Image (cartoon, rainbow, N blue to C red; front, top):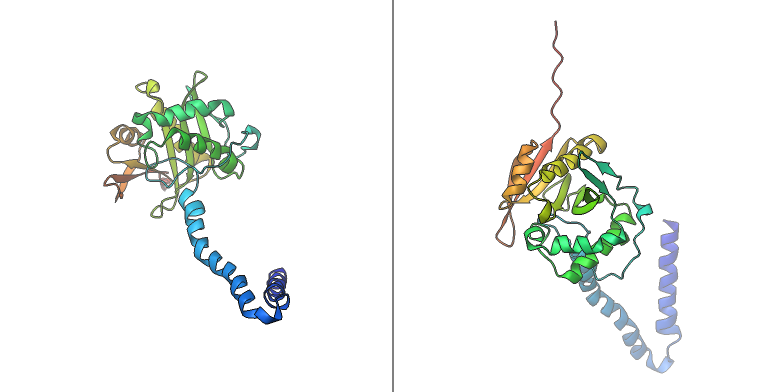
Amino acid sequence: MCRARYGRSAGRGCCWTLGYELADARAHGVYQGVFNSGTAIGLMTGPALVTLTAVRHGPVGLGRGRTSQPSGCRAVTPAPSVTPMTPVLRSARLRLSPYVAADEGQFVALLQDEAVGRWFGDGTQSAEQTHALFRRIFSLVYAENHFPIWAVRHEGRYVGHAEIKPSPETWLDGHEIVYGLSRDSWGLGLGTELAGLLTSYGHETLALAEVHATVDAQNTASLAVLKRLGYTQGRAVPEDNGRTTLLMTSRVPAPRPTDIG
C-alpha cells in the first residue's frame, strides 16, 4: 500500500516537471498540449491492444468451443523438466507423458487432419497457428504450471493429445477433459482407455467430485465413449457457428449408507 502511494506521487511529480517546469515560459500551452497527447493516445489505443493480445489469444488448450487462438510467440526451446503439473500416467496400453520438442511435427499433423482437428476449439487452424500453439504449451502452460497437457503414446509411438483443466467456458464451473487420437489408432478401443484414464486421474488424483467434457453434438463417437464410461448428458449450449455443444459429466457415486442392524 505504501509503495503504491509513493509511486503515484513520484509519477505525478515527474509529469509536472516534464509538462510545465521545463517548458518554455512563452509556450506553456503548446508544451502542455503535446505532453498530454501521450496520455490521450494511451487511453485510445490501450483497450484495442488488450483485446488483440490478452483477450483474443486467451489461454492455451484445446477443446470444443474454446478460445484457444495461438499467439505469434517466438520459438521456445522446450524443457520437459519444468512440468511438475504433468505427471506420467499409464494404462494397460497407453503412456501419457509431457511433450518434448521432437513431438511438434506429429502434434501439428494430428490437428491438421480435418477428421481430428474439426472437433478441437474453433476447428482446424493453419499449420503456422498450430506450430505456435505447440510452442505455447512450453512457454505458457508448462512454464507457469497451469494444468496437465500430455502427449499420448501407444507402443512407443505418438498417437494423440490429452488435457485436464479448469474449463474456460463461462457457463461451466469445473474441470474438463480434452483428448484426441490420430486416425490410424481408431477402432482399437484406445479412445475409451484414454478417456477412462483421464477421468480416473480427475476423480482419484485431483479429488474432483465431477469431471466434465464438452462435446460437439455431432461427434457421436466421443459421445458414445463417454456414455460407456458412465458420463451423463447435461445442458446443450448453442454456439455462434450454429452448432451445439453438449455437457457430459462423470460423477463420483455417493457413498451407500451403512446398513443398521
